[in-house]
Every structure is written in structure tokens, then in C-alpha cells.
Image 1 (cartoon, rainbow, N blue to C red):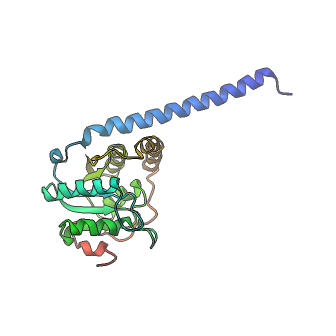
Image 2: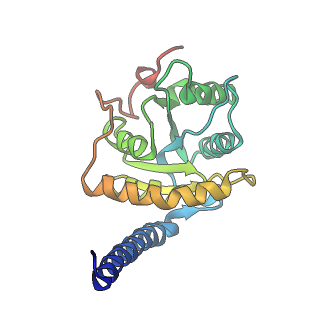
Image 3: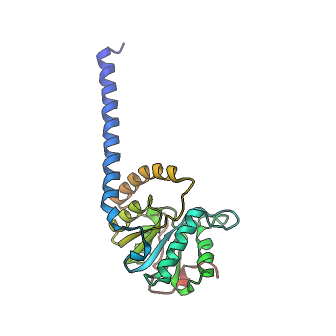
Length: 225
């Protein structure tokens, strides 16, 4: 029979582990947010010049329409491009299945809005934020980026970018109130811890491949005309 003293010791151990885990969660989140918040521009017009806008993917509907959160990202990238603050737009998203394609949905939207084909690069293997940013640096050889996404997402994206050697700034794409806003905020707490671990072990994306420099031919990154 386990003694009362042993039971309290076991409970104390679990409590200690729980508190340590909570403290670690808090410290990682606090550090990522506090370090990178000063690099975020709420007003896109105030953002500095960069080689490219990194447009991070999000949900696309079955009929090819962009979700509100993704359309706001696309329109913010368009504003930066049309204002001459970036020379290129690098679209990075999930195109891991023939039945789901964030990348070409964004490509079509941006082309229709007037982006020159030679200025539009596509990353079909941006399955998550870490992969998108790592590949932007190592496949597309980006030296400087304006990362375009919503506020909740920007500190993590900037943390990854700065960790892999990109001079990166964030541009907020918050142009609406979003239905999933509370969920996204909560999910981001764990996502930042995951990103911290990936940076710590220098994780590699699922796919790499040959270089497609942003200074070169954009069509090498396209899978169709």
C-alpha cells in the first residue's frame, strides 16, 4: 500500500513539472513576442523597402475563392508591391494535394490584380510557417523580406526569419474582424513553442530542392501557365 507521504510526493512532483512547463511556455511566448513586436508595421506605408513580400498562405475554398484572412494578406502584399516597397512577391502555401491549392489561387488573384508574371514567385511546399520562411531563405535566397500576415502570426514568422538569417519585418494584414480570431490567438501559444524547438534543432523542411533565386526567372517556380 502506498503511504500518504508517497502520494503527496507524487502529487508534488506532478505539480512541479506542471509549473515548470507553464513557466517555459510563458517565457518562450513572452520572448518571441517582445523581441519581434518592434519589427511589425501596422501601417503598410511605413514599412521599409525589401527584396520581396512573403505572402503566407491560408484557407482557400473548394471553388478557388480566398478566405477573408487570405484575401487581406493578398491585398496588403499588392499595396506594398504597387507602392514600390517590394520588388517581388513570394507566395508560399500548401499545394501538397491536387485537390487543394493555396498557391495557384493566390497566383491567379495577384495576376488579375496586375502583378507582372516575372515578379511573382511561387512556393508550393510552404506547408507551415517554418517551411515557408526556411525555404524563402534557402531555396529562393531571400536576403530581405516584408512578411505579410495577421498580427497574431507575425512574431513567430519574424522569429523564424531572423533565426535563419533573413532581414525581415512584419506588415500587418488585419483589415477585418475574423471569426476564428480567438482560436488563432490560443493556437499561436503552442505554435510559438514548436517554432522555438524547430529553430533550436535547425530543423529542415519536408522538401527542399534546387535554388530558384528571387533575382532570377520566376517561371521556374510555376507549375502551370
